Length: 147
Image 1: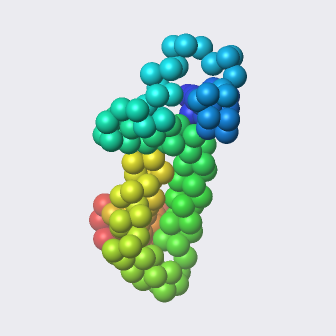
Image 2: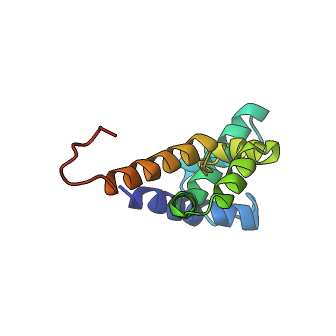
C-alpha cells in the first residue's frame, strides 16, 4: 500500500515531465493519445475549475512521497514534545498551531495531501503521554482506573 503514491509519482513524472519541459508542441510521441485530455487540462484549455482540480491532483500525486515523509517527521516531533518534561515546548507548539498563518498554510497544503499537525493532535499526544506516565507510576496491586 505504501508504494502506490510513489508509483503514481513516478508515473506522472515519466509522462508529464516532458510535456512541462518541452511544451505540448515538442512533446515526445511516446505519450499515448489517451493522455491528451489531461494534458490539455494541465495546459489550461478547460475552465478554471477543471484546470485547478487537475493541477491539484497532479501536484498531490507528485508530493505524495514528500507528504508521507513530512507527516511521519512531524508526528515524531509532536510525540517528542509531548514526551519531554519541559512544558515550554508544549506552549510553543500550542502558539504555533493557533497562529493564523500556520492554519492558513495547513489548509492550503491540505489540498495537496500534505497534512500538517493541528492543535487537537498535540493535545491528544500530551493526554496520551500523561496517561502513560500515570499508568507507569501505579503500584502493581492497584487496579487500573483508580487513583
